[in-house]
Amino acid sequence: MSDDGASLALDLDAEAFEAIVIDELDQLPDEMVEGLDNLVFVVEDRPEDGSLDLLGLYEGTALTDRGQYGFGELPDRIILYREPLLAIAEGDLEALRDEIHVTLVHEIAHFYGIDDDELHRLGWA
Image (cartoon, rainbow, N blue to C red; front, side):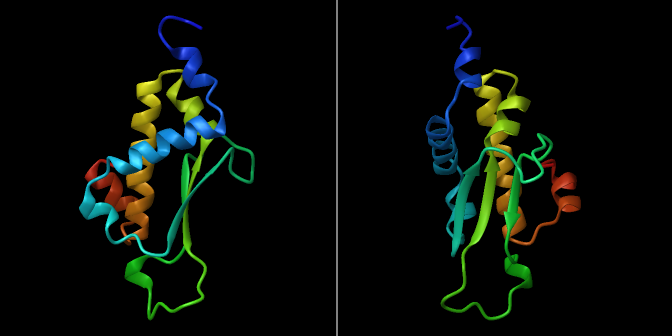
């Protein structure tokens, strides 16, 4: 293991990665997470196309586009992709935490109906 901890970040298995995601979720402001109803967070290795270009994805219907929300509906999902996030962090554990944090904020914003243009304007691209 190197002294700078780089190999640690590159060698994170799914369980260790998920622990960082949970820690970053716990650090988000209460105002951001209190309204996250019927939403699950999922970690997958890569997007379906196998690319390393996509860091996260919101699957569902934004709050601003919902009509009546009823029982029996499957939860919306926020997916974080482990391998692309590890690749963009380039072996730096703090950079990985930052990328996970930004990706969580970005995808949660989509849940609340904030589109990519507005996220770019706000500096959360």
